[in-house]
Length: 422
Image 1 (cartoon, rainbow, N blue to C red):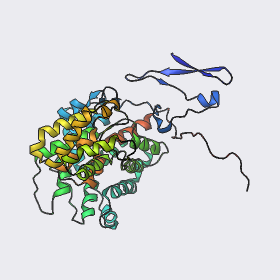
Image 2 (cartoon, rainbow, N blue to C red):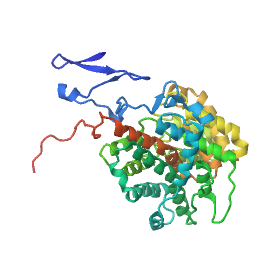
Image 3 (spheres, one colour):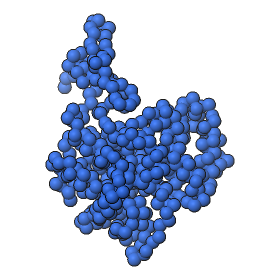
Image 4 (tube, rainbow, N blue to C red):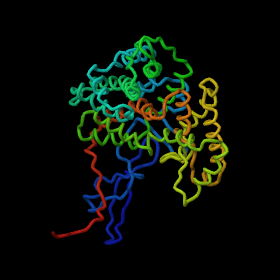
């Protein structure tokens, strides 16, 4: 086995730690015995160089701009398969055959209804409450309605729990939206597909046989697929951290939803549209670009750069192509699009952005498409939740199967006072 040698320059002692090789990506140094052998911790703020687990779900190569689910390139899945295909792939480890997909689709449709008691929860929220606040609360409340999931041991139980949550999340998102407006709730329509049904529950009024355009379903389904999983990001790590305590799976997912809400994470696409609206005109773009480059100005250009990708975000490439293809059919806001394209043009050709590898990310384009779908900004992160739920729950299952996992418990470098007396 390959090893790495650590030399302590204070006393010339050396220590060896094994190097573990993945199937793809960088090797990792196994430092689980570091403290026992050396009395020291590693120091890695933000865990930028720390692998917290082994996983066979998602692979990212940030330098190459590569993203794969279970080995499948995101480009193939987004362009050739549906979101439910992707859900089945993540949960079962393989793409579904036609009969498997039909059965999976029907199960999801039937499980989309939520307990009538949850209506009371939504009615207790104040008018104009943020949909993400209601969404996180409702998912946590699901643990009360399905408490039996706390002590699951059987793989079949895991799969039932997973399908139940994936199916109900769009319903809860739609209920959150409609409560924020004070309009009647709409039940799921079992005759409609997963993505079409969500748009129906968002838009319809009681008794209305609303038609949803296929181009809209396709665009939103693609966004769901692109958001399905993204390795050990902040919200996924939160789900795993809560799961490691033995908490109810829906409590862990609720924690992930709260983590995703942050503007530096899932809330970024909302910020992109808000910023485009603030810029207001293509004539103002150059001034805002100058502000973004000014080290004395705290203005930041939203939708550029990524913690992992140091190349074009592959999901952004897909959405950019989709936006170009469907611009006319979707009815994209021409003024916002003109501002966005001018920013994109400048950033992709400006040395400041190129040297810092600040490429457009998924949030830069997804907000434009969601706006075209007439989804309000305060629902953007809920859309992210719908897509990401399958990833979170798959990561939860993987953690449960991992014999090496322990309760998440990072250490610290203490910098406070040593000893004080009263």
